[in-house]
Image (cartoon, rainbow, N blue to C red):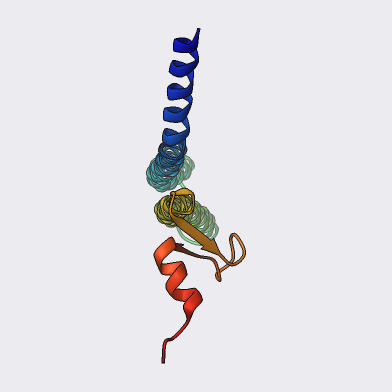
Length: 193
């Protein structure tokens, strides 16, 4: 029975000695996972930015297509008007010419409107894409900073738990310092002059 107690005591001592390292390893793993998540978020934002750029190209293409359709409809309307005038023996002077010009002017107005709307839609998509790229950069940088802060915090806590060190000041404040027992003794003695 005493052999079992000795084994348990040795195992407990080994676990106690390893616990700071296990906690540090867990903290490092957690920091790594947080960093990986921020990088995945940044990549998702970059992918969304690419989708926004594609949507901008599609909006511009749709605007050109709509403008082309308006121009084709104008050509068909003008051709139809001219055919009716010719069948009726009317020359294209005076009122028929004014009607054709009014049709052309309306088609030009609608074409310009379609192009303008397509340009606005495309630019809105590009702005959204640029914003997503900026946010992706900030997310990635924040992940890197958080990883560094987490690792330094883990090292600081690990040093504070290391045997032979003394922590002075309030925990978590800027005044907190970790010193070895020898450094603490020198500090307590103060200057020797």
